[in-house]
Length: 447
Ligand code: TRP
Image (cartoon, rainbow, N blue to C red; front, side, top):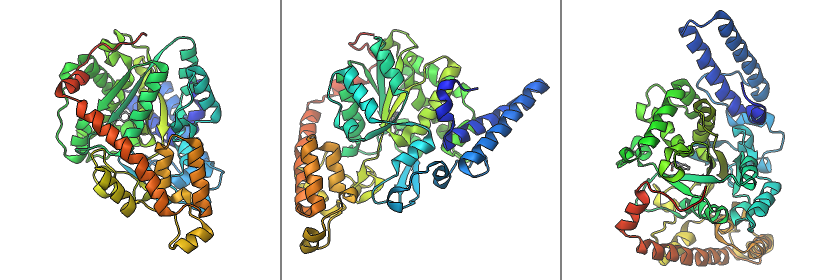
């Protein structure tokens, strides 16, 4: 039985689907355990009620193992799809794609996942509570969705602090500019709220899904491992099947991995930082494709006596070729790497960045370009700090006053110094620094 605060979430197709899967699981378990008849009947009635809710919300019958599709979400979403393009969006932790050149329809995703929109009111509140101008990622809707942010701010106002958790699966030698988003943002949150950050590096995940080599030394963190096992004990195969679409032929490493990504959401995993306290709230800034992991985490949290982590979800960083997919380190042509030279940056942008401009200068001057599908413009929304300058670029590009080549030049000149500075700082990092960061240790901050 869910508490009042969760009512809103329970209405999304995905949440309903997950509840149904869990309830089916429960009924089966009760039967296997030969539970009291009344208890079984109550559980079955609940299951039937959920099936009716599901049918009403999605217009489809519930089928175990088949999560609700985008078309299902459209039933509850009465707003028109962007530009009438009812494009197919595919979003999970391993794949992101859409047929829409503007990118994924994020409003629909909020409905489907049952999260909340980052409204202007929340951005204003972050400004008020932190006393700082909101980061451009907040001003521009790049972190567009959340869970429980108001609760985090309420507590912070009452001097109850929180901590940050984000992560990265190392899938290639070098990171690309899209990988910077959670790090730029967590650094900002860390500075304005004066809170610690834990970063999980899931080379084990990449080993399980992509055959890359794993070096994870969990033995250094017995408390972390204890939480992993606790989570594993409280989530069934049926639940992860429902959430992640695992099948009977997926290896058991994949099936149990979500518990590893969940564990850093609980402060008791890090006694060196939190002195054994298990009640410190966690806030996870991440791209929205990671949400399934944290829906599972939030579901299990109260059952193991921990607070649910709050979330701030970002949009995807588009591939150079267009917003139909995200930038991917395993495909070098879609990416600008943090190791690229100024020359490589320039040539990749000129060669590959999808343009919303017209075919000829004359046509462009006459009809103007389309900033909404233009990858160079999209990248500027991520990295150009000045709001007025960005707005002027949009207007000039749309009117035709600014040409594609000129827009690409502005982007090149924004990225080159940013990446050069990163490389400069990267050079200062010694093996000693890495060792320090990889060692569980007390952090200098006040609870
Ligand atoms: N699964 C993420 C990836 O593939 C890595 C990750 C682990 C992560 N923990 C996280 C990302 C927490 C965001 C937040 O890269």
